[in-house]
Length: 77
Image (tube, rainbow, N blue to C red; front, side):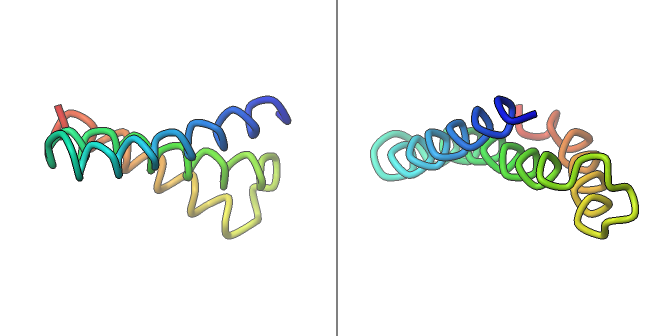
């Protein structure tokens, strides 16, 4: 779990930087695409922090948000 949390954190930071650079220098639509998947990393971090604690409200929020995020992915392509 530790490695997954660390990698998601790195991807969140890199995705945030890439989103910012894309919005300013490339294309707002490209920034939206990268930003959307960067949000997924934030959801993963929340999930990793509350993993195996099904009664935790944050875990439930992360699970439902993750599900909704995956459902709307096709609209971002």
